[in-house]
Amino acid sequence: MDWDKSKYNVCVVETLKQGNHHSYKIQGNYKGADFDIIRRFREFYALRNTLRKRWAGFYVPGIPPKKPIGNKEDSLVNERWHLFNKFMQELSLISHLWESEEVETFIRPKLEVEKGLNLMGRMTSDNILERLATHTGIDYMSANCTTSKYKDMLREFITSSKEVLKFLDSFKEFAKKLEQIRKMKMIAHTKFGGFLNKYEENTVAVYGLADFSNNRVVSNTDDN
Image 1 (cartoon, rainbow, N blue to C red):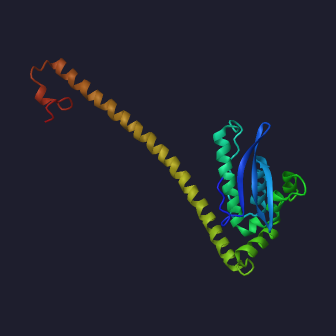
Image 2 (image 1 turned 90 degrees about the vertical axis):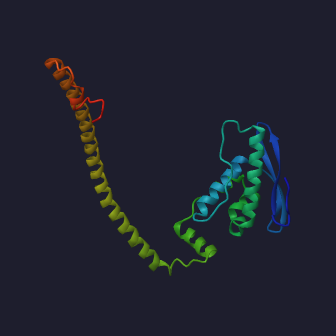
Image 3 (image 1 turned 45 degrees about the horizontal axis):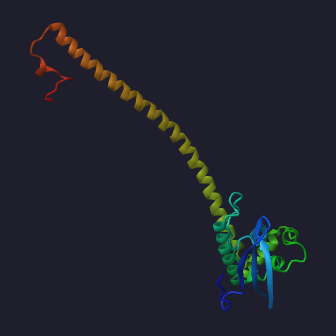
C-alpha cells in the first residue's frame, strides 16, 4: 500500500494469512513513537464500535461490513485492506479521535485489544456533553434558551401531527367507501348497457321491423 508519510501518520501496509483468517499489518507513528502492529477484522470492528458509543454525536470513519460467507476470498481481503487503511488514515487526521484513549488501546493495548475496549464501557450524558463542548466549542449551558425554543416547536409539531393523522385515517376510510361506490357504479353501468342492447334486439325481433338500423339508440353502428 502506498503511504504518503507527509500527510498520514499511519498505513495498513499489508495483509497476512494466519491460519484460517487474515490479519492486517499496521505501521505508523503515534504520539511521537513508531509502532508496528498486527490487527484482525474483529479488532477494527471493536475499535469503531467503541468510538461510536463513546463519541456519540461525532463523525467516526466507516469500516467494511461483516460478511460471514466468502470472507476469505482474495478480492474481499484486498477490499478490506484498502478500506481499513482509509479508516486508519482518516482517523489520524481527526485529532480528538486519534489522540483518544480508545485509539491508544487499539495501538498500544495493556490487555487484549477487544477486552481493553470493552472494559471502557459507555459514557454518561454529562461526559458526552463535556466532550462536545470541548471539541466543538458549543456552550450548551448558554444554549438552553435556544434548546427550550426548539423543544416547544417540536411539541407543537407532534400535537398538530396527531390531529392530522386522525383526519388522514378518516379520509382513508372515506376513500375506501368512495372506491367501492365507484366500482358498483361501473358494474351497474355495464349491466344497464347490456340490458339496453338486449332490449333493442328483442324489440326488433318481436316486432319484425325490416329496416330498423337507423332508428337504433344503443346499438347504432353509424353513431348518429
